[in-house]
Amino acid sequence: MSVEAKLAELGLELPAAPAPAANYVPFVVSGNTVYVSGQISSDENGLITGTLGDDMVVEAGQAAAQRCALSLLAQVKEACGGDLGRLVRVVKLGAFVNSTADFTQQPQVVNGASDLLGKVLGDAGRHARSAVSSPSLPMGVAVEIDGVFEIK
Image (cartoon, rainbow, N blue to C red; front, side):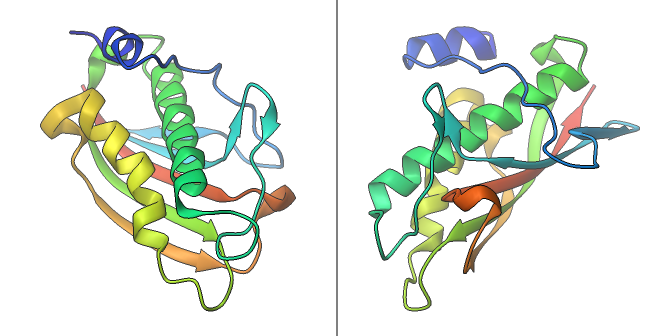
């Protein structure tokens, strides 16, 4: 089953690959590796902002992380010339969670992205990752995630 078909089965679809917000490229392809720049939490209503441990609960953070994962896949699709069938696996995610100093559930928040990638890609979606706290993120977003992907 294709990635898009699996997403549709889950009631989701890929957004358009977001344009960079500053002086960088959205992804770099080097050999069989795609390095995707940080994707910030946003949906059809705009930016998903908030601070975990203050005005945002874990479940809302997980939904924000899931949106980041969709944007990562959209960038990989662009890097593959529109053919997500070329995606071999997710190698690593680096996640930043906008959170208070005493909030310690960053891994649970980032599970929103990891769980989605696992559901959509199976074993190819299993990856190494980091999940760290940040006192603020660009434009006040709740989550930002970058990724490394293997393609064929």
